[in-house]
Length: 181
Image: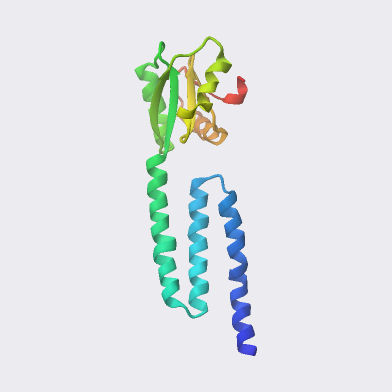
């Protein structure tokens, strides 16, 4: 009885970590943090399996649940990380501005994809391109009159930090969507 109680007491703290990590995984907004939580979740589950006498299940959890799923997740995150810059078809960005945007987003490991649209005279109407069905998935930005409006606040903060670190002679201004709407 005493040995059973001792082994249960040793496993209990690890068992308490599983729901905590599960909640953190579900509530995480960052794909990188989700990857970290998922890796810890699989590792702790494998540890529990090994402690209760199921080394084959533990090994399978480590190989498939932690390593393979993490590897696939990393490849998916990396291949999908791009920012879509929507610009006015009648006023395309200059090659200097494109080069500058590429250098800024390269530091964040984001690919820049340009999408041309015909802009309206009303700025708020142009922001509706962000909610269109074509604009799902990657973060978006709208380039209007030398100002880039970025829809994701976390991306805007990262971009502004990079712009502040790199003194450049560009006329581009980075702003959030809520600043104009």
